[in-house]
Amino acid sequence: MKIVNIVPGFGGTFYCGNCLRDSGYTKSLIDLGHDAMMLPIYLPLTIKNGVEKDESPIFYGAVNIYLKQNFKIFRNMPLWMEHFFNSPSILRFASKKAGSTRTEGLEEMTISMLRGKDGNQNVELQELIDFLKVHEKPDIVHLSNALLLGLAQQIKEQLNIPVVCSLQDEDVWVDAMNDFYREKVWKLMSEKAKGVDAFIAVSDYYAAEMKVKMNIPNEKMHIVPIGIDSSIYKYAEPKNDPQVIGYISRMYEEHGFGLLIDAFIKLKQNPNFKDVLLKLSGGYTADDKKYVHKQMRKLKKAGIAKDVEIIEDYLPEERYKFFNQLTLLTVPVLKGEAFGTYQLESLACGIPLVQPALGAFPEIIKQTGGGVVYSPNTVDAMVEKWVKVLNDPKKIVEMAKNGKKSVSEKYAIHEISKGVLEIYKSLL
Image (cartoon, rainbow, N blue to C red; front, side):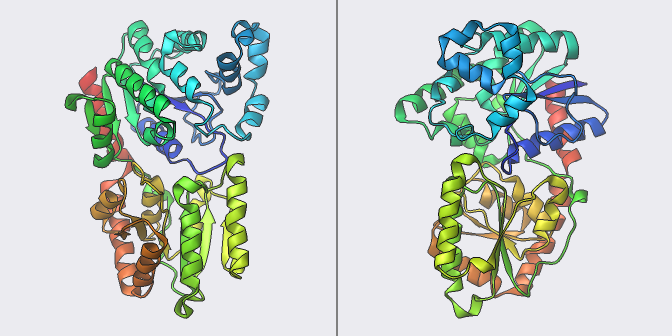
């Protein structure tokens, strides 16, 4: 089967769970004998794993579509100028600039992209479709997320093939908009959803959320969790002397980074936990830099900055080394997440989870037995749960073993991919 997975590049400045999902899934399809690839839009792919085609261009180049959206004069720019703005060096520069992952200021762009052939990027859409027709000739196209739904109808009509769309954390982007844009975007996404043959949500929680937000009928909704190749993660018993709390995700407010810092400061005020360390990883964007520095200043003021380490290397082949330094992992995303790939990675390395009872976190912890949840998502509740877990080393080891076993049995990437393939076959 020939499968093209259309995915947005993100610049590589922070830990991206969706990107890990797409690259791991596409690689597993290749391992299973299928002709699969990732086709990047906006920015170059950072996580590749050999699943991209060297000769494939980057469609919807971030600089080009921004200029065309905001300045009419650029909507008929000469081809040489488009190629210049789409060059790897220009796109790499753009990926490091502030605002590339921020909703504010990109509301109209989001709407234009969702409008497809009726938006300001209609030329880019046709270029992508022509490339698929001539160079790839796929049996099925899989969109990475619902913000790409503007591509679906034209792909279906011109290539006469099914289109599948993954669902994961689109609400984070849309719900950050003001009331006017939020309502408009959800309505447009609901309309464009009619042109998709199947949706794949990564958790029961998120499937229920998106069925309501996008009016998706039951027969189109499928639930397939994220999978990982647990063989690339090395198991090690959680650290006990000293005990170490870990965080790996983009370091910004919405993922509860400041909440975690405040909780660690409070924990260290307890003499029984004066030796506990905190290790942070996942990176941040230019937009987040001021916020991250503010949190670091709080640690210095509390006199515990020496007990906190930021680990900048979070590439896939190195990430197990981060987890192997921990006792437990907490990523207190303020409103929860649709899944959280870092949870599976942590459990694969034998590190249990302490997570807020929000989003899909309780669902995953219940299915794995590899952690505990707390509620509400506050400093006091987080510290209280940390104290209880850190005081019970036997329970920590038990959760570590449960988590490792469950990830191997329930979230093995090749078995997960076979579930997606069954959906493809039913459509073909």
